[in-house]
Length: 311
Image 1 (cartoon, rainbow, N blue to C red):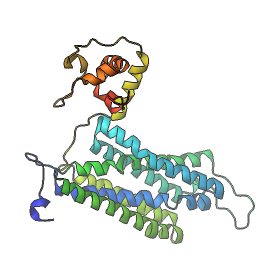
Image 2 (image 1 turned 90 degrees about the vertical axis):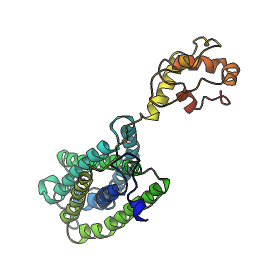
Image 3 (image 1 turned 135 degrees about the vertical axis):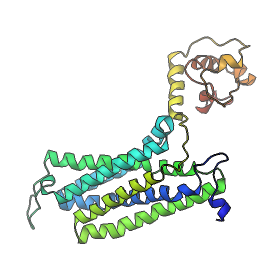
Image 4 (image 1 turned 120 degrees about the vertical axis):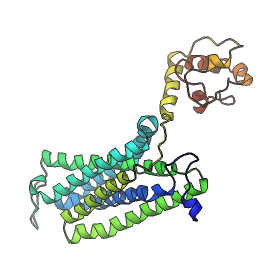
């Protein structure tokens, strides 16, 4: 990329552009090393250090992986609906760091894990409820950190650019850095865990996570913020609730105007009255729109699929 592109920012804005690039990707690299370094060898840790059976360890590991993959949905909804990307990413990075600290403590403090299983023993001592609580709290914090950072960081980074080409370049580097971090975590960090000690392995994850938080905060003065626009899931849920509660309400009069159909405010956003064919061909749809306008914009009904051809 040339110098002019490297200094790209929104017209009239002093923030955003490529100056934010190293801070965002630095945070992604550190958090990815930490998360992948724990999850990629978590089943082995359960078996060797917590005396969990192979089948149970596999089931727990699958649940953890599933939660880690579903958590970004909750993080995205929270970011879009109220808090914004930066707040969610910072909070999630700190939660992930707390989880890494707890993992390190379980590996270094003997009272936080069961005694080692003697070689050839038929039965090993299971972890106590308190030991399980600390371990699963660490897992929960790690999942929360993944949920708030994985894709919110990508959105936050894309918001720093107006040029679509710059956004494409950013996404290329974003996923490249994420996969490089995953490779490092699943090779070097796992090697340390298996051949040096679990304490050192988790300590590396903690250090990487802490460095990622510092790097992210160092760039706080350069990020361009985006005002949360509200989660689409909330709007669609309002449509369903309103339509269910007042499904049999009489249809609106034919000469209803745009003002009567629009409820709520959204600066700079224009909304149109439903078309004539929509209103004449489907009285039930017309009645539904007349009711749900008390709860949300009529455009939400169209977003849900209640369009002219579908009712």
